[in-house]
Image (cartoon, rainbow, N blue to C red):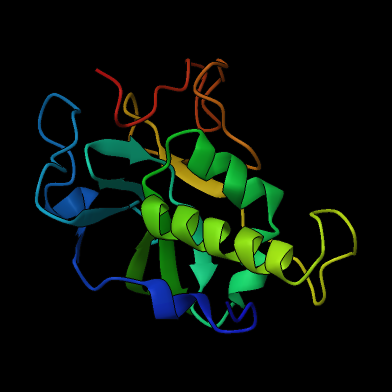
Length: 176
């Protein structure tokens, strides 16, 4: 596996983008994100505020298209989000959403990367990874209660949060 290749090589074009103004939320505050492929939900500011796909809904973990794949695989924050149920990564060029990399594609790359390191005679942890680690911007999640986008360095569905835009409990857009 080539760890320096850009993450965009794994992205799929099977995604749609919807925003709050175009019906991303129905009248009851529930999201309308059950189409085929992936759906990127944009917040009122035009930035990604959620991702749905494969029956999962989660935060928008945004990664620049030219980020080396090795940096993504070495990012504890991104891997934590994927293990926690995020359906994938939103791939952007500047402010434009250009694709999505599904969690399954990242998991497959982790397996290939681990196997290549073991075949090369190295055990995990034997050496520091080369290059920089991906430092993604905070995860962005739309609040179902007020529609505002909240940012989290690390989001856990087991924790409770106060909305960053009002004096109420933060409820992720995907909650029933």
